[in-house]
Length: 271
Image 1 (cartoon, helix red, strand yellow):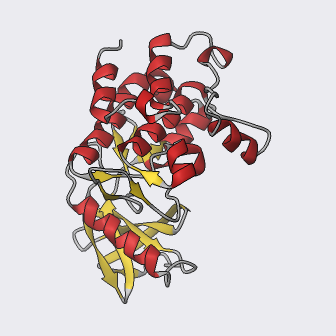
Image 2: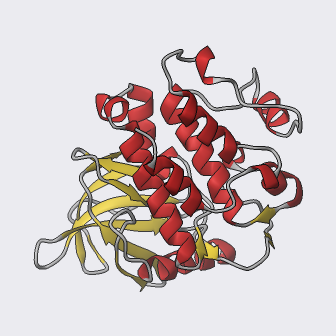
């Protein structure tokens, strides 16, 4: 773990941010006093070749992306044989925090936020990549309402046909049935995860819930199951939004949106 004031990869560490998953996050300043977020792999994972390769591949992909709703990479590589990346510092809160707090920023700007989220994912797909870890923790929201997609550690190149991955990427609650059952990923993996994330934004709940995680997973994998209707959480939520989100969450791929650009199109027609 880096101490405050310590030098790392050309940055002086000023504070540690809340960390999750396999990485530590720090704020650092360079010689020109420009701030950046420094990401390092946690010691428990740093010798894992697969994790190191995935981390650096994610940085390589991020370096090729340039969009206002995607976090900007500053630099990445090895520092004393340790993989790291520095990304732009953004004064923001993650979407999970806004959902848990029922934050007014979320309540009053849901549609605007969803449009930006869909724009980020659509851009990533059109650029030739899959994110594969879409969830509230990986969207941060500035106080002015700008949404930024972060954490490309699981990102891969987009292929013409579904790709079989092992181990599974991401978190099971955000993975579509074909990924959970057959380890297949494609555009639909991100579309389904977007649907789960938006459902949580609208209701404060996941679309498939149970007493245990196994109950939730069983409901998620039931071909005849459907997410809990909005009205059981809030009778004032718009039916058109429910239809759009449920289409992202359809069990069969043929019933889902075929592309994120079409989700964007339908979001733009809503008021």
